[in-house]
Length: 344
Image 1 (tube, rainbow, N blue to C red):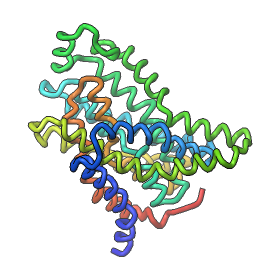
Image 2 (image 1 turned 90 degrees about the horizontal axis):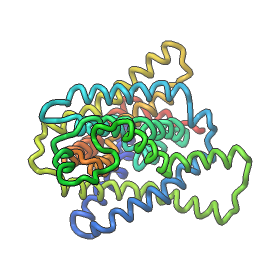
Image 3 (image 1 turned 45 degrees about the vertical axis):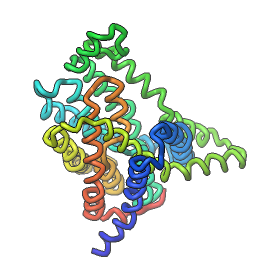
Image 4 (image 1 turned 135 degrees about the vertical axis):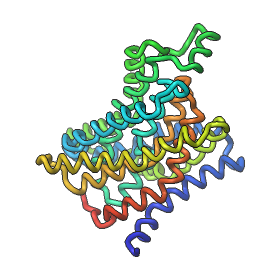
């Protein structure tokens, strides 16, 4: 029990900051018009500096571990396929099922996972977590967006009938949507920040002291502002969610995210270790906990952009975030995460 309390002492502040952001937006202390600005600050300034710093101080072989990628990529693909298979129906067309699969397979590793897992397990956790970020940005998101564009939903068809200038990722053109999704992933500053950090370290460059101070200040702001922003984004998404969305359409997917995804990662990782893969127990623990994080909050923005049921997606994200405080903390305790804190 004392160990469990120690885990809660680490995880509680992270979820309290999310709650603060939610309440600030709900009570009008944070204007809705300010939420995109906060999101932009985290995405284009604070978080890239944090990841740049990790890239600067972490070897490439750790950031792009073949063993980690060999476990996490199949896990993500299985989660996408299984979630679509379980949810696809006449009432839930492919577009909505694909975005449901994305929230089931895409943990909130960028805004939440990096700072939380580093606080829980030490700076070495950044390597495996960054691997998962790259997979989800470049593969999982692109795949689900392409699948979502493969067949029109009723909502998308109605939009198409009323607007001939439809979004580029229009239904029936999954290849074009895949290319567009890949372009979107490559325009994301996070992978480039990691690559820049690796390049600076590999070239042995020493950045000027004032510049490193600015980078450090922005990096230090990433965690609290990102968590606060998650709460505000959840409030905004929930405010526009359809109130009639039944729990049966979103709660099972949230449970898949919090329970099945980490179980799948742990099981595949255990098999990989059994077959002799160079995957340490520490890396497996980090990967499992990364998969146990709630769904990425930015998926609701993608769902809205591509004409999917944003109300359902928002409720999946909200439910997974609310439940993750207990499920994630309990899993961290079961895996004895706090005792595996190791240096890089």
